[in-house]
Length: 286
Image (cartoon, rainbow, N blue to C red; front, side, top):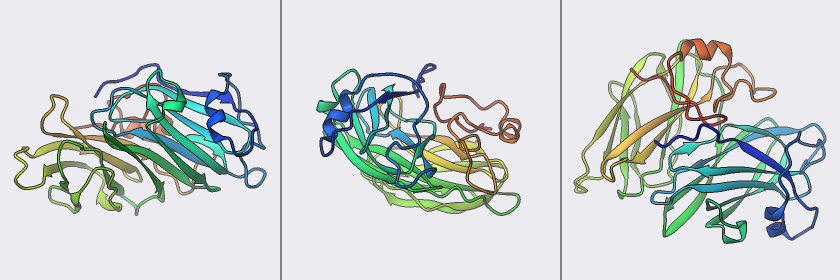
């Protein structure tokens, strides 16, 4: 997977123009803290949001998250296929997520999707599909910690070269069956250890099955991304940490995944590679 060592969320002010959401995309870039009144349903309420580029055959893209009412717009630039951003703590409220080819105007967005960020919740917006049919999928992330000694995993299909995929934990639960692009499985609990994840395309596709060893830590919550192979054939699995394992939702993003892992998770996942600054951290593999 192509990495972006300097990829990070950019924040810029949006114009307060009711009903003209397209003007939000033209806001000026300026770093700063999120104002307490931005796009909020109630003062002090906040949630977490992140974005993923799973649109097969689409080159690098810019992803913009704009509040409907005032506040600051956040932008990820030059996001490559298979990239999952860090969680960003934002005021609760309604937002528009737009995905556009890298460097293009937001007026040329391939897809736009509204998402309501609720107090104390985490959401992910995935751009899925193919170059000719880009879609957006909003998913509420359940970061509830698993039972003691366990980890929670789920699967998101971003494979566009095959009709559907099956995925299972070898010696463990089946994660997905006939999952099409954009499908999101439920969470499954597994003991904290190294596992082999097996993914295969629908029968008759001629695409060989693929496996990957993934190590999960106790208390962690993980998302496994199924992607098209880097050489244009086959499938691959890219795991990312959603939560490092806490009893409650994080207060400032420090315990969510995407480069904001807690110290305990850093120790548990020592040797794991970083996709990029403020980009989802991949899980250590065995």
